[in-house]
Length: 360
Image (cartoon, rainbow, N blue to C red):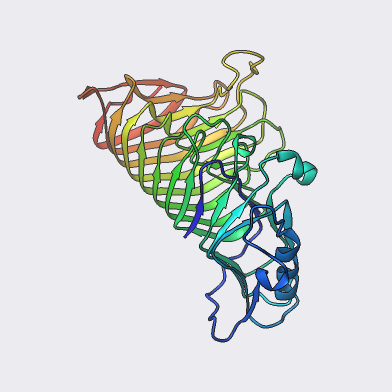
C-alpha cells in the first residue's frame, strides 16, 4: 500500500503497470548503499538518484529498495527510458519532503517518474511536511495503463487545493481499493481523461469525485468512458460532480457511469454545473459553456444529502445535457424527500427514483 500522509505531496507519475518482480531473481539497489541515511539532517536525494540510475541501466529485473526510516529528499526525477521494463521501487520507510517549498523551486514536482515503462511502486509513506505543499497532489498526465491500488491520501478537510488524485490526458487508468481524505476533490478527472475505472474508494472529507473543471480552453480534449462504482462518500462538499466553465469550448463529456454509490451527509450529492466559477461570482465568464455533456448514467445511488437540493442539473443554454439516465436513485434530506433543480437537462428515469427529476 502507498500511503500519502497528512500535509503530503506526491509525484506526477508516468507509469505503466508491470507484473510483479520476484526478489529472488531481481537485482537489488538499496539507497543506503549509495549514501542514503534515515537521518533528519541528511539529504538522501543523490543516493536515491544513484540507486535509480543503476536499476535503470540494468537489463535484468531490479528493485530500488528504501529500508525502514525517514529519508529526506529534495525534488527528484526518475528518468527513463530504462533497459528493463520490470523495475520495482519498494518503500518500507517514509520519504520526507523539504518543509521549505522554495527548495523544490521551479522543478514543479517533488517526485517525478518520466518516460519509464513497467514501474511498480510498492509500500511506503510520502510526507509533505507542511501547508506549503498542500497544493500538490498525486497526478497522472500523459499516462497510459496505470493502476493505483490500496492508496491512502490524508490531508485536513480545511486544506485548500489538495486534490487527492488527478487524472488528465491519460487512458486506461484504474483507481481501486483506496481511501482519500482531503480538502478538495478526492479524485478529479481533467481534459483528456479516458477509459478510467474507479472502484471501492472511500472519500471524505473532501469535495467528492469530479469530472472537471473543463472548458477553460477552446481546443481541449474530451473526457469519456468513465466508470465510478462501489464508492462511499461521507461528509463531502459534493458527491458525483461534473463541472465546466461557461466559455466557448470544443470539449465534451460522454459515456459516464456512476453505479452503486453510497452517500452520507453529502452537501451536493449529484451535480452537473456548467456555470462553474470558484470565484463566487467575481470575474466569472458569462457565456454559455461549449462543453457537450451526454450519456451520463446514475444507477443504484443511495444516501443522505446535508442540503435540501440533492440533485442539481445546471446545464449549458447552448448545449443542453442529453442522454442522462437515473435508475434506482434514493437520496433523502433530514429523513424526507429531497429536492431537485433541473435546467437544460434531458434524460429519463426508471425504477425507484427519489427525488424525481422533471427533465427540462
